[in-house]
Length: 332
Ligand code: ATP
Ligand code: MG
Ligand code: FE
Image 1: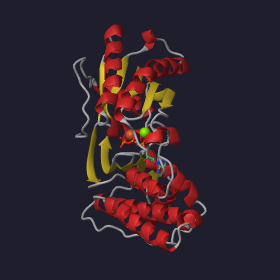
Image 2: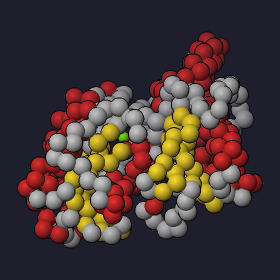
Image 3: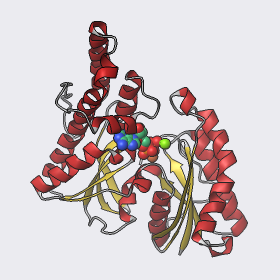
Image 4: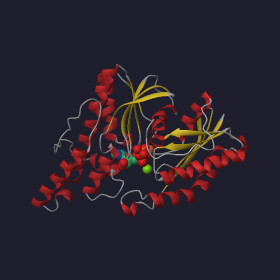
């Protein structure tokens, strides 16, 4: 079974081919146009997707050494995301499906982030918990099977990726600042500064208070010394990262204790964070978890995760129709 998948929910135009659950190609065109604006500009994203989608799909098919006659189904990201961006991928997939007379498969982007853990062995066994930490979402998902998963905790305000990016912006770092905080944190002292941990009930998260606390902290320090940030960047970054990671891990530990599940995964772009990966390994040792996270190229937005999810849907005969439209909101 050969599935071609496209992903266009935000600012990467991506395509991937998988055969029987094995990823044959994974092509990603990251849009550079947004850098100068310090965030993704929806209208510009849609236009860039229109320009990129045909060459990206061509490349994915060439890398996989397949022709359009080999394709059994075409998958696209249905939700959530920027509606204009999603429409480009959906329209492309439905048109190609119509032309080839093949079925379309609609994939939920956040479910695909979770199932990216099934791309490479050793895969987690079911049921597993997945902490999905990305630019727009922070969720703890209980995954019973590729077809059954449930959000058991999520952020009530900013996502973890936003917490990284917004605090990086306060430090004068370019967008997206998450990877830069990670890099500076490597040589800093995580205990140099103490930022507050929010007290949120249950398995939910909050990051907006942390951002405000850091804003006031920096204002005060800069009054004493205008060069405070420049002089202490590694320590500041390490302390911010440490707090974001402890907020995430404390809830993940709680979820594991409450559910009794010991297969624990990460997903989403923030799972690239070295502090988070180290914390997962430490807690895994402490609590006897089997831990997993996807290879880097499958953590940030990509179409391979759409392809693997679509492959499982194909096995169930879970097809969309040519009328299936994308939606911006993230209801499962
Ligand atoms: P969503 O899936 O919620 O719609 P998204 O797909 O745009 O959002 P991803 O591509 O999964 O998000 O992740 C992007 C985020 O990951 C950005 O916020 C970025 O700063 C963050 N990120 C990437 N690498 C790191 C890192 N090493 N440390 C911290 N954050 C990182
Ligand atoms: Mg992105
Ligand atoms: Fe994503």
